[in-house]
Image 1 (cartoon, rainbow, N blue to C red):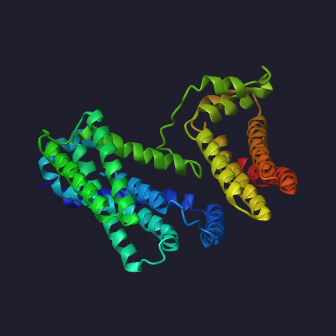
Image 2: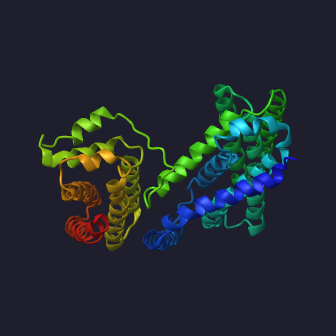
Image 3: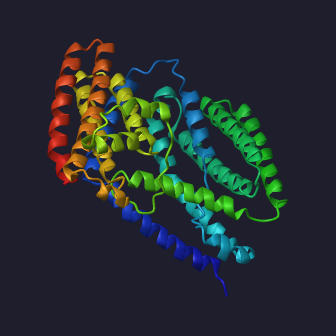
Length: 403
């Protein structure tokens, strides 16, 4: 007899084993050091910023919208796989325990984000509303958890609807109502918050009624969404180690390719061309590179101390180099590269040259930020220190890893 509860335990155990296999590479010593430094510096300047918080700072808007978006994003992790489309459909009427357990698991794994966000907003909340007690903020956290459960259930019910247009409208309505509820609640307007809550409950009950009218579970949609989330996790893990399960995405980006592929049409530049267009057209590297530049630029712009800015510039240069070095392994499963009549040294040199160029561009962008901030000494030190750091790190650490 099929036991869906036992089946979930088996699937859950395999899922934990799979994710832990890659998490130990993601949270290695390099990333742990960078995160520790970033969190310590952010906490220090956060406290300094709170000391001079303006009286008209839009705390309710920031906390309300953030919490509203946080509870609205409540995906249901079903852990389903492609073979389940064939082997589990016949047992759909016995899958109640499985899906109940999957919803509990989805809620639990999303709790850590809620706890981090509410912990980060705590000092801002009490700095903006010093006359309020801590118990009121605990009530706010409790309301967040309640709405998280409601949104998770509503999202699960709407996954039984195949029409994506209906799902998008429902999601938009819940996002607006969630943000409204928490804005009014944080701002102390309890009557509007209660009205928004009632409207949310109406949408919540509507989702329940719509789901009950559906013929059954949309298995292909559940599998597609869970596989997309796993592929997202694999793309992150692929920045740190080889992931054989990763399905590489390729985008044309023809205008970007035309910019970066300007290399001489000679045999020795074969890999220069290959890795440049791989960087642009792959779904991983360009996005990661741009995100690190943007996040680093924001941190540098808002940190008041010039020396800490320089340290952050070097930190994000280090992160970019460390993440982009996996470009060398991108074509590891393509046997045709071994047939190219080009020495292996050319392949390594091509990646190193491209990393030099990428980190130089990033260094220049950060240095320009120092000019915007009228910090001319920081501009000179960032250009000089960034160039020296890039050379030492790429020729020392990265080059050894490519051999």
